[in-house]
Image: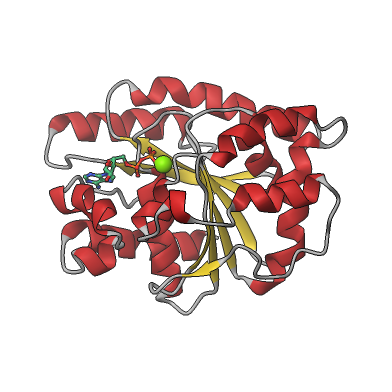
Length: 262
Ligand code: ADP
Ligand code: MG
């Protein structure tokens, strides 16, 4: 059974999608079988891997629809794209936004729809990464209910730490409320860092001081670089777009640390 990891933070632009793709491709380069589920109606993961979200006939919404309709005849690879970078992706587009209403209309078990799907396919993979949207709604709740753990990218910036409390509270409620009692926190990854600044060192200290005793704060941080900003539009991961650059090196190191901690 694959390990299921939700990459979540209700703040946008903190490096969730970049981390999801870079970790996913990093794991695939180590011969792991990886499925990335794009779980954000913006479809950024889908697009960053070179697929146009608006041109896709089947996306994660169709899969959820089937489960809601209790149609469990979903073939193992229904909707899944085998990307040229060695990972599989279940893409998303704006249709996932309308799923929110449909999920809310489900009378019992509305948080467990994604979980039901993942249970059906998880044997095919070593890792299933869920690229969450920047909110803590019923869609993200489905991801937290399906996951074994949450990986939290945090932008190395002074105000980022504030929003963390809300996310940690939500995770706590998912566990104590019984929605998903096995859910743990994989770790906090500092992203978009300017490591040479005093500010960065200060932020790292604050995060480690506030959470380090209970939560794994990764030693590796991801530096900011222009190539990482350009990569999504090229439809390639950072490994293909700028394989010798510092962001690819950082994600490679992070992938090692991630495997070791897991
Ligand atoms: P999220 O999924 O949390 O919204 P993204 O991964 O999409 O965050 O990143 C937000 C923006 O920052 C994107 O334009 C992305 O290309 C850019 N970005 C991500 N990581 C880096 C980095 N290490 N250096 C520079 N830009 C980055
Ligand atoms: Mg994103």
